[in-house]
Image (tube, rainbow, N blue to C red):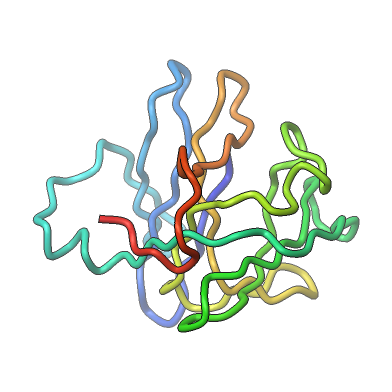
Length: 150
């Protein structure tokens, strides 16, 4: 899974990936120098800073210009937030038809990120399978779009 975020505007963003044993590794990227280790302990206030919401995929397009196979997704996050778009490297397990109407979890308060010619506004969340391919996080039962994870 490649959910890496580069240093932007002086902020440090985590890079998330799987180690050789499949365990999630967190690496702080600071000026191009990475320091690996397990995630530091945080308090509930830190957790609350990450705004994870649920939304429904309403539109999917192939993204042939991407460096790795990807889709462009439009996700309806409810009336308060609206529809936001993202690029996701999820072609190993999902077809565009299977994604339409699917509810997904997404971080909505990262700053927008330019991915090629496409501006990604949210980060859709998933876990790596045994081969490192993304398996999306979805609620087990339908929930209202825009619901906040707690």
